Image (cartoon, rainbow, N blue to C red; front, top):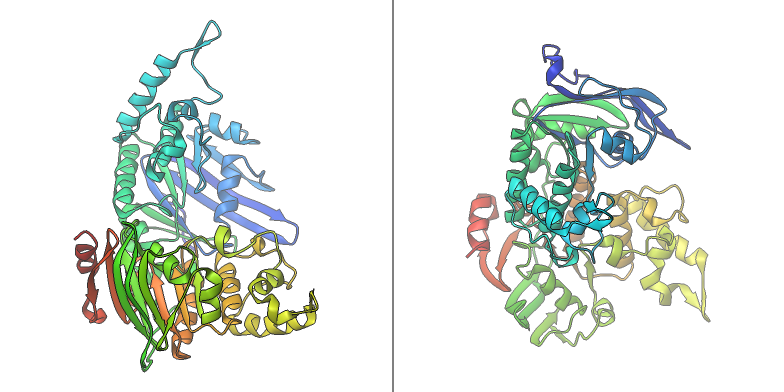
Amino acid sequence: MHDATDSRTPAADVLLRMRGVHKSFPGVHALDGVDLELLRGEVLALVGENGAGKSTLIKVLSGAHRPDAGTIEIAGRRPLIRTPLDALRAGVAVIYQEFNLVPAMSARENLFLGRERTWAGLLRHRRERREARRLFRRLGIAVDPDAACRDLPVAGQQAVEIAKALSCSARLVVMDEPSATLTTREVEQLFAVIGRLKRRGIGVIYVTHRLEEVFAIADRVTVLRDGRHVATQPTAELSRERLIELMVGRRLENEFPKRSVQRGEPRLRVEGLRRGDRVRDVSFQVRRGEVLALTGLVGAGRTETARLVFGADVADRGTIVLDGRTLSIRCPRDAIRAGICLLTEDRKSQGLVLGLSVRENFGLPNLPQFASFGFVRRPRERMALVRFVDDLQIKTPHFEQPVRNLSGGNQQKVVLAKWLQQNAKVILFDEPTRGIDVGAKYEIYRLINDLAARGMAIVMISSELPEVLGMSDRILVMHEGRITGEITDVARATQEQIMDLAVA
């Protein structure tokens, strides 16, 4: 164990001090005496695997959960935090990954919702507009105060959330996975905004699974594991390998597991694929046993290409050939029958039915195999599922567990299991490890390697360049709907080389 802060840190510099925080739910001790300290003008990265206690700790701080034991001090005082409003009054603002905005209302209206500027019972729109512009100027981001939030890009909506925190005189801002849906340029803008918050003496707790961001933005790192505080150290004193070891509790010899697979004949060939300006004359091939990475900036056409191959969208033109046979793919059912499967970027809304059980999600695309005379044969369904639960090491207490209650990594495995039951020949992974902790990422990487070893052709779409370089045999880079470059010598490739092609 390591102390949360240096004992020589002046008390006046400590903005937040949480001591001995405990929180239990039925059957789960989510927080076991956790300590955390945040200094003024500091960015503290809060990291750990899924289930480590990060979200619970943030909800305790924000008033969404009441702790069973422990103390919270903010700027030397112990406010009574029983509700989110109490936390806000104490200077704590939380910006969740899912923004707390009313989409149909303007940026200005969202900023002052519940705190409208009035005079004699009338709304003072001009004053609100002036204050909104002033707040956005302080953040260094141009946002039209009168634009509806649903019409703003994700970075604009995030700016509204941060401006709202400033308007409430927040001293401490918690950002939960703030970069999950941002482009590379928008992440740079976010970091610039965080820098301005630091200069104003505002403390930032930055919750993320992206380790490269930890080293880019954080002054110190606090690691939680299994509901306990493991370590808090200056970022400059940590290596990526050491941070992973603290998070997972064991040493991973290689973040990206090595493999040696003999690649075979071309399995999937795509020629001249086009859909409007989103996908423009894209051609590529993937061999048996090969992992082909498709990367580029958000909006480059990567996901759109995968959706065309899978039949989720209809191409204007193009040819798809699988094992030497030209396919006519008009819908996902055609692709699935041919042996092409897609693990979508947003598994929660497009890959799973969260309210259904693990068994039901596994069975949905496989009903013809498990049904007789219009009735689902559950024993047959369970027997098939048992094999994949063992093979993929899906962690679930039972097959009737609602899939929404599983971790991100295990949800991804359920999606993979239902496609493997279809005897897939080509698997398209769209951001396979988004929102998944580092330990579960390693398991997903091993699964990808195992699938390639079985002769499947893998197309992996990823925005995480270390993942692209660590997992692929070959890299294709897209920009504005076109393939702008191919990297075959992946072992010698660099992130800079990929970015040069991505902005070409």
